[in-house]
Length: 67
Image (cartoon, rainbow, N blue to C red; front, side):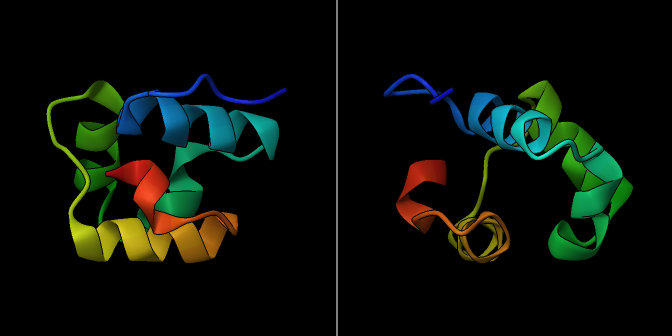
């Protein structure tokens, strides 16, 4: 029920989406585009500080979890 400590940003985002029953397209307005969401979930792009703040607010978790 909880992500493992030290999970990568892509694992954490995927876990939080799954736990909330959301599809990746729920993050398009948060992160700005379908491409950015896809890159984060595939692991080809990391999460910036600004994106971490937005994801933290969206998922109601600490932004530090995404960095």
